[in-house]
Image (cartoon, rainbow, N blue to C red; front, side):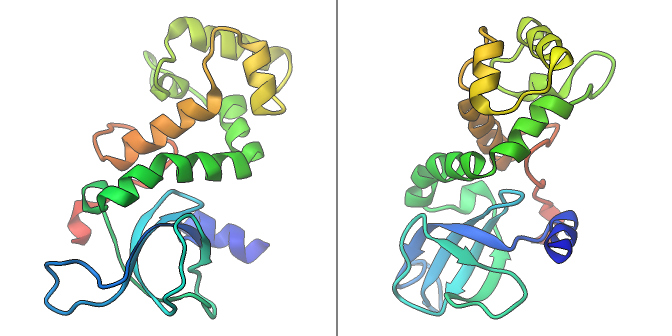
Length: 193
């Protein structure tokens, strides 16, 4: 468990969901080989990898850590949202939602611990549709008692839409790379390419 926490701190992904499987690789590639496009479970890192097997399903959870991998041979590179296939872009919202639901405590914790970014803006205002009214309602509710679940957030902050949907939309916005602030993903560094 400590090793996994250390890897999360480093920003390395242990597991990912398959967004798309390209059996013959990309059409413009000089050396076609099978590829999978992946979404990391910890920091929503977009990756491209070479599979070991031909039987990989979309939304399948695969191990991509440092140890022996059963379905992924090689992580080729980290990719940007624009590099995703249309199939992967279509699968992305569902995959993000799935990861958020499976890690409910972690994401509910964001509502409990989020703090101001500066004197004018709170980090919760980065969530789509959360303005000053919503922010004040969330802060007031969490001061009374920490949120225990997404259902608890929805019940106690009546003005707020579905918290899972808000988080999903924020993750996708950050993955597109147009954000000034990143609260849920690791920003893509253009210098890597």
